[in-house]
Amino acid sequence: MNFRFIPVICLLLLTCALPAVAKETKNISYKLKNAEPVVFSHDIHLAKYNNNCRICHNTLFNLKTRKRFTMIEMEQGKSCGACHTGIKAFSVSDDAECNRCHKGKPRPVVFKMKGATDAVFQHEAHVPKLGGKCRTCHSNKTITGARKATMAQMEKGLSCGACHNDKKAFTVAGNCGKCHNGMAPPKTVPFKIKGTADAVFSHEFHLEMYKCADCHTKTFAYRAGAKHYTMNQMAAGKSCGACHNGKDAFASTGDCGKCHPGLKPAKLTYKTSMGEAFFDHEFHLGMFKCADCHTKIFKYKKGASSATMAQMEAGSSCGTCHNGNDAFSVKDDCIKCHNM
Image (tube, rainbow, N blue to C red):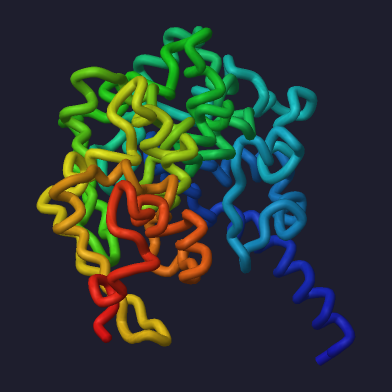
């Protein structure tokens, strides 16, 4: 037997077998979350390129990584967009050709929200208004490239906010119920406060006078606990103090019980070289209001407004009132405050 002809015979057999191998390849179905699958036909493409698999593998499609590409990436020449440019084959950038790969009607997109009802994007409402031009959104990084944008980011033009800006369409800075189906009035928000009663914010009460956009997101982010403010900061106009300034609404520097239900300020103890000194909130609230002392004289934090006896005698801290005229002087009757 002449072994020199064996390699030639094997090569001929492999060459003859290629069409059969190519013919056995199956259609590839790319499942989409909100639309019918996109189906890639090996038969159609192999017939066009003489069964040459290497035109796509692994130059365009790596069988090991199996990376998925967005429409934006395809328009930049990745994946199917390498050939579907409008020259070799119909363009992925042509709105009129979308249905050649995407069959059926796109389904609503549901965004799960923590602490609120789901937001729903309706393709059937948007596609007709855009004249069937899918690329208006799907080739725009500002829109589809920012799927997880916050409400604050949307108000700055990202995601839905690119159109929903009160010019092209209703603003995302309000109209919450138009996107969040079945949205009930937001819940009452409790704020845990160390050393005093919890503060409570009632959405239901405030929505009788204001709209969501009046507070969100200029004053408050759409997330409980996103940022905490001190009473001093509120007194300076931050957080609740933006409205609760004594003009638009009662001041945050007084009427504490309106926000802190069941408020019972504690009796304060100060350790000094002359024995412990005491301040009784309950006794003083029988004659004064919180705003008489806070925060002009005392900050809403124990130890933040500490003063020496000399400073008190000069009119600071307790000495503002305990001056011998409005109340007994800090110079006398030491045992009234110090457990000596």
